[in-house]
Length: 208
Image (tube, rainbow, N blue to C red):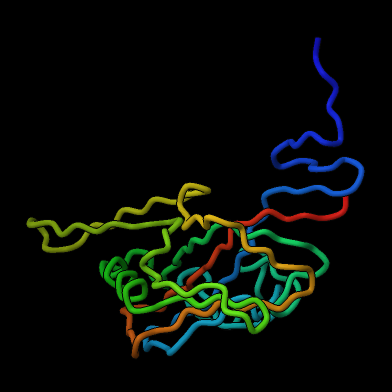
């Protein structure tokens, strides 16, 4: 005979406590623009949905209002009213020219020439080189001896497996400011501009 579901039973992606709260997977993500001429740092989670910034759309960089494709942040520098437990980190890259033969090299320059710094309020939570962070949409390139050109292949949708997994989840309390910065070791130039998206894999807890 099937047993009734009680308020103490946990169902993944659904209700944690049916009488009080629910907890489910909900990543926090944001996108910043890396110009081909390079920059000293990229700041994430500082421009919410609707903010006009430089981004790549349809193969060209320009000024655009951020949409939910770019970020799910609705308040500058914080999450409003909800508690998050961050348990992983990954990133993805979008190129100005997805067919550019040197895209793989440009990714290496960004990944190998930078490091990440995450703070909650003024407290430093972690620092790590960017090459430790898995990409959700990796690409590979191979030069052919026939045409002396490069062929690119991309893979997307890495999901939960393509992330740096934290041993202990990091809580971000409601209405608490936090920052994530990608710092570059000198000026790293790329062939074309690149949008860098950072994904904080997390569980959101909120009143049911």
